[in-house]
Image (cartoon, rainbow, N blue to C red; front, side):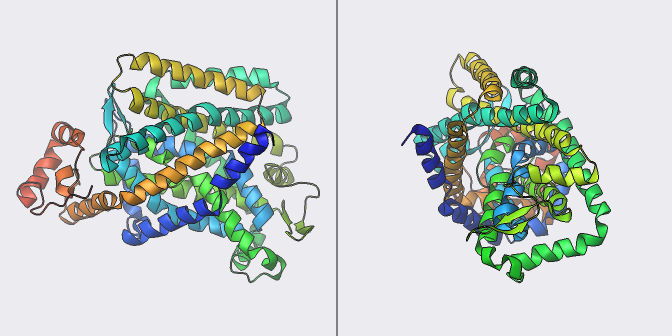
Length: 506
């Protein structure tokens, strides 16, 4: 067995049903314990998204949201949705929606924890799994392991794969050679990443909303031209979902599994990546960022993935494979999922426009994923070397390696690279989801404290001791220097700003 086959088997093992069940279970577990804040506090999600502020050390809530969404929205929002429909039929779309709804609970917990135990590294806020494992679980060896795995997955294997998608689509649509694409993409990436977290945040803030809105608008235009079929489209999705459609009854189980798998792979809820973006933000209370990042899961799946599904299903540009052989639906003979479904859907409306538009979409989707990877890798480098006097040199070296790996990825990709990327992200998911389950108490404490202060008529401010949380000393400095009025208001309302009976939740 060669190395490609070995890595393929390992990736398949890591992304087995066990991980899928764990991520689903965690989403249900957190959502129930928190009484479904993704419904109850939806207004708060939107409010904090639009009303956050940045600082000298932290990005705004919206910028953090944009960086995380840039990481979530990628090629999987096009090819992944098509693959889910190919193997699971139209019913797979519903299960993508469901996992986004439940995943918002996991996204809240990991992002709130990232804020609780964030640190000031070289005058920038940094946080994420490695930080809350060391401070919350008090397990530094595991934290170091997670940091190393994340650097490998987001700094070495993942970027090349994303860059290859850009180069391949540019070559197919415009005939641009991969070397030229590599130079352009690597150059743009270098300009952004060497500008530091502030420049990354500014670029994400501008590019991510633009790309998402443009993509969704095109889907709505396609739906408008097929408006008479809209009721039938949703009837097909729901009938396939609940095994009421005879045509797709044979793949009812596949619809669930493929919808869940592709949904999880796209929105990344509970996998630790969104937490890394969350840890860079400036907020007065961790719950605010937790709610904002929960909303980013909605945008990824309920809007962007749904846009792809609408384009494909409304135009009938899909095939559905029969596990027993042949096809249950074959509208595009010889096509096995991937971006071709979306390209055909666009071509039916604007002939010849499908391939160029998808190539442009892939560029933006993949490029924003690349800059998110830059944040993720650098935050973990910061964790490992934050006390090293050569930190700035090490950080510069890692960024340089990222640029090189992106250029190399555009001119050469392989099944091994794809497998290693899947292995890295899968390992991150396994480790992170178990960790945030172990840190349920402090995660829940942040939401309870936030809601208690809201009931008191206050703008919530975070005092770790009030929640019984230890090892979060940075917050004492943050609240005293940046939120003195909110802190004074809280202390005035309950005497000291501390609960009378503190409970250590670590």
